Length: 497
Image (cartoon, rainbow, N blue to C red; front, side, top):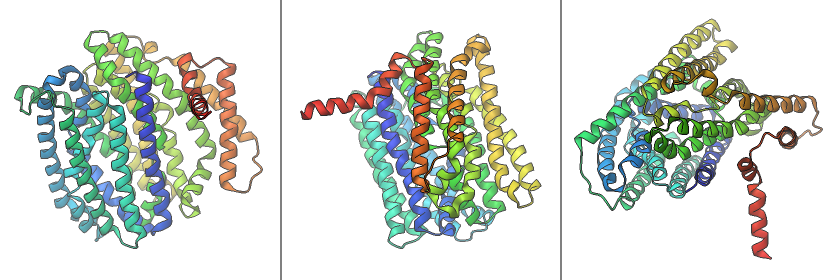
C-alpha cells in the first residue's frame, strides 16, 4: 500500500475516533455536574499516570520488529509481546488497587478510591487493545487497524454516555468501560491469531531480550513523558477542587486533529523509514521524515493561527459559558503546536537510537516541574496558580524539541540547517500568520457564535488556500490531496449518472 493511501486511511479512522472523544466531552458537560465530571476524569488521570509508569512501549517495538522478522517469526514475536503485556497489565492493576487511597486523599475526593479500584481491571484489557494499531499497520492492514480502533472507541464512549444519560453515576460508567474493554481485547487477540497463521507460538529468550533492549529507553521516555504530561492535572487536582479540575481538564488538551494528523503520518511512514534505515540509507529515512514534517506543517501552522484567533469562542461554543475559563489552558496548550510540527521520536526509532528520547523526556520533565511549581505557589490560589501548570507544560515541550534536533545532528552527522527544511516551514508559517492577521481585522456580522465561527473558518481557509496558490507553495502530490474530496464527488456523480 502506498504511503499516501495508508496515511489517508489511518487519518480517516483516527479522525472519526477523535471526533467521538470530542463529542463525549461536549455531551458530558451538559449531562452531568462539574463534580461528577471532575471525579470521572480523576479516575482516568490516576490510570494514565500508573499505566505510563509501567508501560514498556511494546506496541512501538512492533513497528520496528514486524517488518524485520517477516511472517515466519510473527507468532514468536507475538508470544513474548502478549506474555509481557499480560504481566505488566497485572502490575498496573495491582498498583492502581493499592494506591487508590493515596489518590483519593491527595485529590480530597474520598469516593475516588472505590472507583479507581473498580477501574483497576481495565489495564488487563486496554494494554492488549493498544497493541492492535501497531500490529496491523506493520502488516500494511491500515483498514483493519482503523476499523478496530474506531469501533472499540465508539463502543466505550457509547457505553459511558448511555450510563450517564440513564441517570447512573461514576461507578456504573467505570464498570461499563471495563466490560467494553474486555470485549475489545478478546477481538484483538483473535485478529492477531488470524493474521499470524504462517508461524508458531513459541517464546524466544534472545528475541525477547532484543525487544526489551529496544523498548527500555522508550519506557523511560514514556514514564517521564506521562508524568510530565499529566503533572499539571495532578497539581490542579491537589491545589483546587474537583469542580475546578473539571473546567481545567476540559481546556488542557491538544487539539484532537493535530494528534490525529501527526501520529497518522508517523505510523504510515514508519515501516518505510525502518526499511530505508535497515539498508543503511539514513538520508532516505531522513527525507521521508522531512516530507511528513512538511505535510504536517500545512495543517498544523494554520490550525494554530486560526484557534489563536478563535479559541475562546470555540471553547464556549463546545462546552457552554460555564466552562469559559477552560479557554486559558486551551490557548496555552495551543502554543505548543508550532514546535510540535515534527515527531522527532519517529526518526530516532527508525534508526534504532531510542535512548536520546529518554534524555529529552527527562529534561522536559525537570523544566516543566520547576516552572509549574513556582507559578502554582506564586499565584496563591489565584489566576496565576490556575494557568501556571499549563505554562510549565509549554516550557517542558520547548526544552525537549530544542534538545532533540541538536542531538540528531550528531547521530546522523549533519548540519543543523539539514535537520529540517527551515525555509519551507518558515514560509508556510508566515503565510498562516498573515491569513490570521487578516481574519482578526475583519468583523463577522453574526450574533450566533456558531455562525461566527463558521464564517471565520470559511474566510480563513479562503485566505490560506489563495496564499498557497499565489506563492506556489504546494507540491503536485499535495494538490492531489487537496483536490481529493472533489475527485471523490465527481466519481460518485459519474457512477450515478
